[in-house]
Image (cartoon, rainbow, N blue to C red):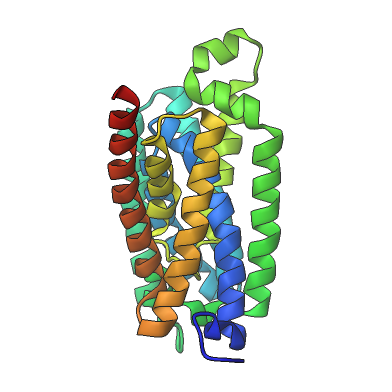
Amino acid sequence: MTNGIFDFLAFDFMVRALLAGIVLAFVAPTIGMFFVVRRYAVMADTLAHISLAGIAGGLYVGIAPVWAALLACALAALGIERLREQRVLAPDAIMTLFLFGGLALGVVLLGLRPAIGVSVASFLFGSILTVTDGSLTAIAIIGACTFLITVLLWRALFTVSLDEDVARAGGLPVRFINRTLAVLGAATIAISINVVGLLLIGALMVIPVLAAMQFRVGFRATWAIALAVAVLSVVIGLMMSFSLNLASGATIVLITVFAFLASLVLSRFAAKALRS
């Protein structure tokens, strides 16, 4: 292979990381769209911190990190929705409780029985070296199912996210839709561990959506722009991390931040051009 920007594709671990990243780039903004619309963006960070407890528990019983994180996040998501429906606490208070509780439990479990040969930092910030054939298969399966379910329930998810009362009056199963969205968010967190890391996945779910929203177009057009931002951020971020020996997750997130700033500038120029 000749020298060039695509030299990283000569390495199997980079190909696996790229494939996993592209799956994540399609799924994360798709779920993030509905979280942002319902002002539920902090849910991503909450589930991400809870996933640490799932990973730590999985190390005890020999469960792969992706599946362990999925189980922990799904259970926590259902618990959050249950408490929110009962109006026991305000939604932000409930998520704060789960966020710090999950993080503390994960730290305690890791401290009680440190896993030899396991880097906690790779879970927190992502590490492309941890994307094995097995984890790539799990990411592909979970990601495909998450994306397909979201597309099938698109209209219902959109209606419930905009106004639960209107959705309920229209006969939609609001409770089921809310819980389904929560579990889909948990699945997105689970497949992000290797590439972006649990501390940074919230950014990939939210920032591309915020960048797309600056153009003030329709919901589906915003979604398409968010997907483009996420895919480009993953590809460019992985290329830069390989070439410059940078942390993959942090590099990808920084690219999304740059994309947001660029969209902010471009949208203002476009608005001025339309007014003139």
